[in-house]
Length: 375
Image (cartoon, rainbow, N blue to C red; front, side, top):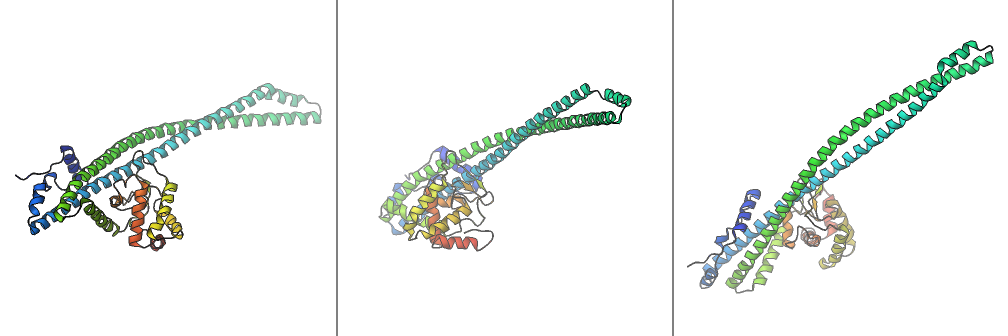
């Protein structure tokens, strides 16, 4: 009786969800060939070749499903990054308005106090008393002095009135700013809720991608072993050959014709260290036969694309990572940790540059040769 390999119900449900979300169509778990199929096929060359083709097709479907999960996770992480940026802007605005309201209130209190002091001086001076002394003054010199006093008192009255008006206006400004700050705080709280929700969705998408990748790896190990048996090779050789084919296919297309990063898609707990990424890239130049002069071009290229941030994200195209791979899952050919490991991203990017342009300087020249820039 023919034996079928079956995955867990959880893996099947996850795969189905990814099909709905991304349009990818991974292979059904119960279509995998059994070891009995492999042994039977070895007795017939034509059947063996058919089994080889079928296994290769299943491997391709598994990788497609894993890539779809990764791309979906990056998209959700990009949404989280945008929510975090909006939250920060709203928080800064609320704090700025609150500070301005506080400053305006303090200024209003200061103006009110100054107005009060002038009013007190007016009360002590008594403008009516000055006017009476002016009327009774017997000589011109006395009259001049009293006129001066009357003018001074009048100025004090005008100044007091002006300061009181300014204090009232400043208090109105403070009240208005306080109201704006309260509204901004409400917006901030709403955005904080949205950012929290986006993080939860992004985390779930990342976990789904990790689970799909682990599931794919488990299935792939079995299929590679079967493939090796059919072709009388070892599983490791088959796996390396498949990796090489995938890398070549991934490098055949442009990394990001949609432009440079304009946001972030940070996986939870990810370490972003542009300086360390540059140091690692510099250490890898010799593996491609490039001299140190190429590093300057590489720095310019990936500064322009991503600022050397492993979580850089293009909100329009979906390009991701230091080299801005598009779609992001292309980098899976360099390693399963492409979403969170900046060295893996650098490895993929250097291999892409080598295959497509021959050197970082040629890639940089191509980047600058057209608008919008891409390589």
